[in-house]
Image (spheres, rainbow, N blue to C red):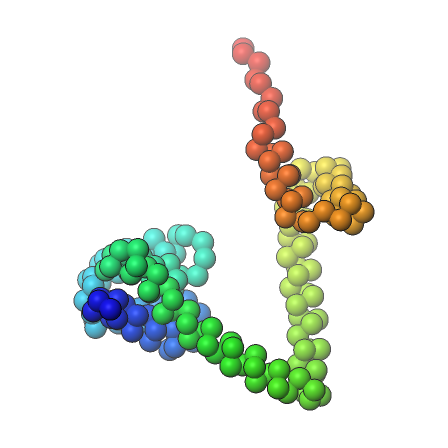
Length: 184
């Protein structure tokens, strides 16, 4: 294995292990690895990477790892950096889920599951209300009710997979001819 791949792997593996708390807590760790330890970039370049990463959607740590890995060793550097960053989380999830499965019959596990369910329901309800409110303002109540009713019929009575229905709606929107403006 090339030295660069090993350095990229170790740098982002450490970030993945120690960056508990999400992306913002990982930023100083990425800075320490990329700027201080391995000197792949200076602080100004790091600030640029951070600014660009913050403008894009998604987790900041993975965007930074992918970019820095690419700058150091190309496409393989990106792959190595991303694998190294998420590997600690994958290992931890496997260990925790295996441990939790071994205690599945215990009452406290059922209590934990029961306590999480209302929270998830509230979060999903809030997300749904946000979507409904945005749809109401963009297409109006009548179209919203029409789309909801059509979706209910197609998904429940015709047993169509939701992904096919969504793809069909997106195709309709993309291929729908736009009204021509009258020249004045």
